[in-house]
Amino acid sequence: MEKAIFAGGCFWCMVKPFHEQPGIESVISGYTGGTTENPTYEEVCSGATGHIEAVEITFDPAVFSYEKLVGVFWMQIDPTDGDGQFFDRGRSYKPAIFYTTDEQKRQAEQSKQELDASGRFKKPIAVDILPAEPFYPAEEYHQDYYKKNPAHYNAYQTGSGRAAFIQSHWRDSQ
Image (cartoon, rainbow, N blue to C red; front, side, top):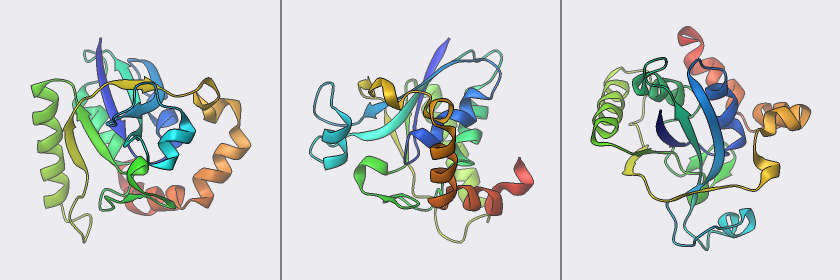
């Protein structure tokens, strides 16, 4: 099993697409990239800790490769918006790929270059590729939010503009 860490705005919206893939053991919502140990949601949202909302995925690379995980990641975000995602703005919502190995770094950088060169987007890809830092699981009520609160999750996914963006930019890839 390996771990992968992706930040794509609100972590609620980043769990379900990965949970649905074969070979995924777990998807944990949490925080990474900041300066405070074990930050709370309120601290992260205040911007005081420097953390980013992210998901940590434990996966079997023999069943679902890291390269495929990165592909799923791209299809959940606006990769040209480095200042947040949809109506969630600021550092805690910025998109990033946190690599845990040199091979993950290589694959993430290659995938980013390919997406940038594809012409799918008019603006350049603005997702940082960074070394993994300590990952802190979010509070329990954030875990598997799409299962616990499906009506609110669906309203948020739609109301934020994420669902429409994904449909309009990735329809041919789904």
